[in-house]
Image (cartoon, rainbow, N blue to C red; front, top):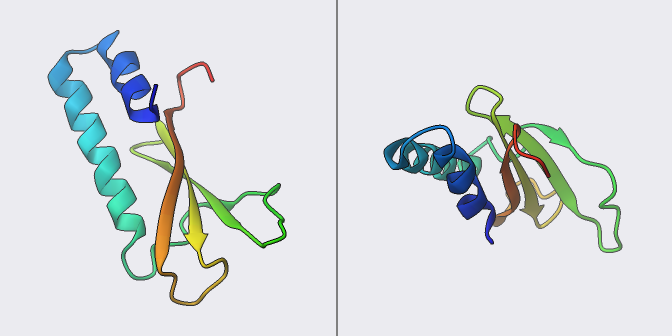
Length: 96
């Protein structure tokens, strides 16, 4: 099951479907924001992705600290990256 589907399932345990859709849309907005100028290195850089080849993976906690995005900047350490790849997304209150 995809990360977003798991988030929807988790949110629906405590809220209605409309709330789940709003949260998913807000997460897509956060992911889009990472692609804007000067936002591609938000959050802490994660260890354990040393390579080779070198990888630049960050952890971004968003939406009042309730959700976490792990994303990769491509090419790694480029001043102007061409791609931001979302690797994982989850609700910080979920069991992982």
